[in-house]
Image 1 (cartoon, rainbow, N blue to C red):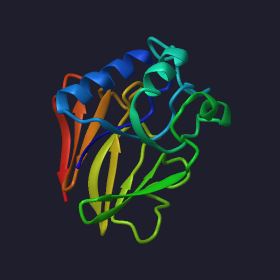
Image 2 (image 1 turned 30 degrees about the horizontal axis):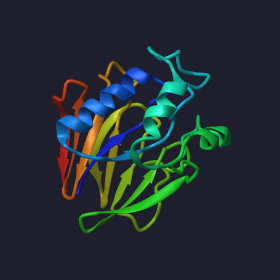
Image 3 (image 1 turned 60 degrees about the vertical axis):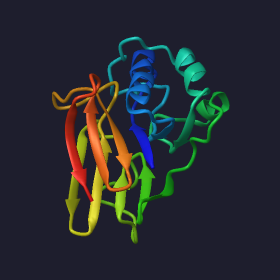
Image 4 (image 1 turned 180 degrees about the vertical axis):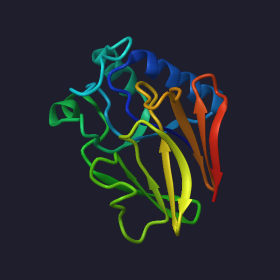
Length: 176
């Protein structure tokens, strides 16, 4: 199992093109998307190359498992042909149970019980760490990173999570 993980696209077609490049570079065809697809939100600046209609056209051609972000609405689901309205999705990562979520409701301060991995977005920070018995993973933001971090995405495999910059350089990694 090798999946690309992305969060917080916020309507940037440039970021989607970087995502496609990363998929080709890492030879993966499935995306785990952690919300905030089309709208940039009232607190964020307008992303470079903001073009939600183009983002819709490209994302609708891809194989995506997704959860809803705090900037996603029912109207977004009307134009995207993959489900985005779930707050949480559970997936298996090797022999571990992983909860995918955006992070505005469930997060490291409010995790779900009985999971091994929390995979979330929302904070726009690349995170890969283990706290007690919980592995906490965040790919950062491919569009609007915070705290002077680069724009990032991640690759999730059965026993590792690696965060990459847009030029495919390893930024952070954890094995579990």
